[in-house]
Image 1 (cartoon, rainbow, N blue to C red):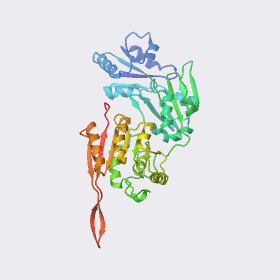
Image 2: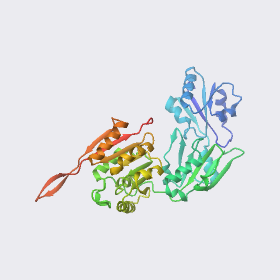
Image 3: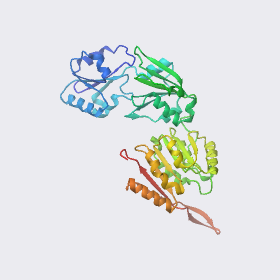
Length: 410
């Protein structure tokens, strides 16, 4: 078949490859694969292209071979469409130019070794090119996580333990060198597994004994102020809250900092809207902290972790966020803005609101220093109120909202 790139998955446990696939491998003029894949076909007579971290260079070399009319076959492990090169090839060359021939994947082998059914498992990757949000682990009894050389099991487990307090009770396993003579499986609590070293390649299995309901029992968006315990004036009002939540773009968010949380209304509604989001709320006022605790109980939001103290003292110890909301801070605002923005992940979003001129000036200077074209808008809500036997429209204080994207270069 002229111009077709065949992508063949080699069985993860080293069982025999299909005879037809073997025939296509030996008929190819160009064989592409990882070094360990190519070593299985050292008698191959054509040219070989090893897959390394420079995927773009590999794609360009394949394209050149194709343009010269050469038959190209690509080797992968297991299912090439399971966080594999198959997806990259289809994106580059189109569906009609790529044929996929999958084999047993490492996830299937790992779960089979542990006798865990696949139907209730979530599969994630911590590979550089495809980092899946770990928040999804909260909603499934089993998580299967692909690791790599830089983000191995110990590092991923440490990230899980540092992000989700409930993970202290979780167990797991690290399946190493599956199907090889020195195959090894280490099982234990996540805290035990985090301290060990592992052979590569490996795959991490995480067991959550009490997964949350993936579909929230109630979705709150712009709930009335009366729904929350709060100090008068110390709550982001529902209309503004709804705009703030939309500007935070929570659909792909994993960790949100709610700084100067007040009643916790923004963070609480954020967890109800985004099932895979974890919120870290920081507040120093004791009365407001009690309000946040009460509101967390009222709305049933265990994924909001409360931190008592000054923002500047606490944020160095929080997991790195991809979203930050600043609704407070007062006179300390100027002192922590740069610190919190430095911790924000690349491509993350910071949203801040203010009603005071002093905070407006601080945020304006901060925004201008990072992105003069950042989004700044003012919200004015006017409400119908009784007035001497009549009714009039009474305006709330205007709220200025700042939204800043953090670029990869920042």
